[in-house]
Image 1 (cartoon, one colour):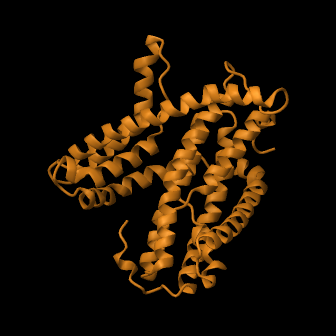
Image 2: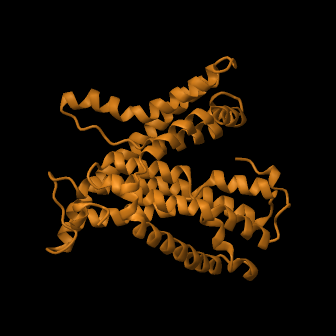
Length: 329
């Protein structure tokens, strides 16, 4: 009921389920690093948690990009596709003929945007270190990432050309990867520490705007209707983490003493999840905002219980005080 009348459509129901699953995959590297540094944790279990958390956040951005394009395809009235009934094989072939080129175009365009942003970021790192000039330069790069879609639409739509979708978060991941790992190749300098320091010094105004707009989108009138779904998704996610970790730990030959509590290290969610939920509301005006409200409630619950569970898992693994101060973001 909380997702509105549009959710009665079978395609929208499928898309809502896909988005909910994708958001459930997201973790919070920042929260994990904060807990690890607070407990001064270090050891194989801690490194595994960090590795899984970092990889899953890259994976979730790719999944979100593909899901967004699939959602546009399934809800596009000019290319009707039915998920149920009719001829499943023909429907799947029709869906792939539309969906796959869209995803390929989005990934390619986002990668090109990421390379362009990397060049701009390298220029921002050359700005004289007189605050707030470097910070303004980096914030300008971020603004370019999220305004590129509108600029591209304004340039191509009047020409009768459909602009490819851009995923700014994926572009930013590529930007950070290129700057931090390709700095020595392109500039002969190690840019990682300089970029990390600049990002940290620019974080406060970014967080101010982000969480203020997040709070503006949380309406109690909507949450009154969505809280049963939010609690249900929260419980299902915990169960999925428990059983998924049990299977992965067995296949990965994790020591038996770590298998019973290892899942507790992956509950936390935060900024990335909130950003993706907000993007859903922006892209899909009909059913997106109610879904955002539900997902944000789930994310808040995960953020409340996640850090204490991670700390408990680290202490149970016996790695608290094992050198976490050396862990780098």
